[in-house]
Amino acid sequence: MGKKNNIDAEQLSRKGKRGNHPFALLGTQFEAVDKKTVKHHVTMLIIATIIMKFVVVFFTTEVFGSFIDYFDIGVYLNSAAPLLQGQVPYINYQFEYPILLFIPILLAFIPAVLTQNAMVFALSFQILMVLCDILIALCVYLIGLRIWSEKIAFLGGLLYATAFSTAYFVLTKSDAFPTCILMVALLFTIYGMNTKGYVFATLGFFTKIFPVVALPFMVLYNAKSTSLKTELISAGKIFLLFCILLLLPFALINPDVIRTYLFATGGSLGVYVNTATFTIYSFLHDVLHLGISPTTVSMVMYALMGITLLLLLYFAYAESEKNPKNLIKLVLCAIFCLVFFTKFHSPQYLVWFTPFLALLVADDIVKIVLFYVTQIFAYVEFPLMFGKYYVNLNYINPVGTSDWYLTLGFFTLEYIAFFILLYFIIRPKEGMINWMKFFFQTLTLKKE
Image (cartoon, rainbow, N blue to C red; front, side, top):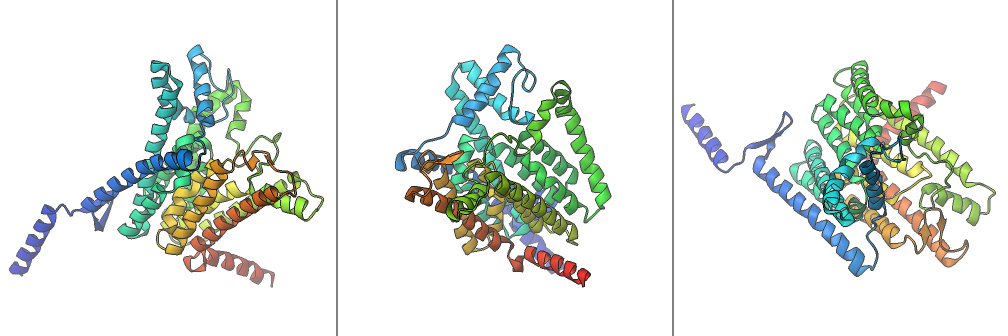
């Protein structure tokens, strides 16, 4: 016995000298993962994320002769400028985003004011978004450690870091910021820190609304180990508190500020042509010559959105055990549902769900190939096709021309590619579709 103990002590000593101590995070220790490996993976992900931004800029401008879109960054700069005259957003002038989006805007605005240079604002804002993107990649990796082996978790992080279309939008839009907050919320949730998860999911609502779609799924996930009532009260208190602090003061002065927090508002605008709604309408109206309006198709799509979200909530409720992978799948499907069924579509919405795709495809080469196929489609859509084949509200070429059919065919194939990828992610052997079969079988038995 003594000899064996001496041998064990010697082995542990050698392990410590090599720095192979088990990795621990947020109270969770991974016996099969050592700190040195994690440190190496984190370094590689940071480097890959940064390098990909330079690669995207080079290929976009030099190889494809396209452009880096600074329009939104200009909007952010213009939204901060009135602050210098003492004006207050929502009260003295319109600001179309939730209030916490001012955090990265102001951080980038300070050096721009000091240097009196608009390009400094653009560069500062891009740096902030890249930092958010690095944190997203790290969250993908750290969440992956709870789902996969360390190698697959690292591959998931690397897939996100090298998602080139997403990288383009990180440099040109603000969506990396709310997506980063959402990923941190899910990281805390999956590592058992429920309250912090609710806080960050709620904060996400005050950056760009969509992160809050994860909140009910987080509540149902946490309720597996406590109770639904407990989690509803906990999440509800946090959400109400932030509404009182961040929304109520503005709403009391200007009630119209509430509209800022409603997803896909702006009913006066038409249906965007890069949406699934317009694609379906084009086939029905322009190819099959059916007398149907875009508004009618849009209403049906929103109804389907509501039905789909309710089904997803049912699947989350019906699941008997806490399963981090299924939580990620449910949030992915919910966010994709928002993007697919709405009549508004900005190409940067891709950023919202790319981390979930990267996390869930890393275990299978077919899914990895499909992942990059969808990235190609998204990159061709914007910036390569924009302004040449379509703008927000119409195709460039007249109905029935070859280029019109090319544009319609492209968007059709793009959405098909995403649905094929989603199918491979949630196919029956992974469990999600089995829930659907169980649900409908239960309904049939009840009718009988």
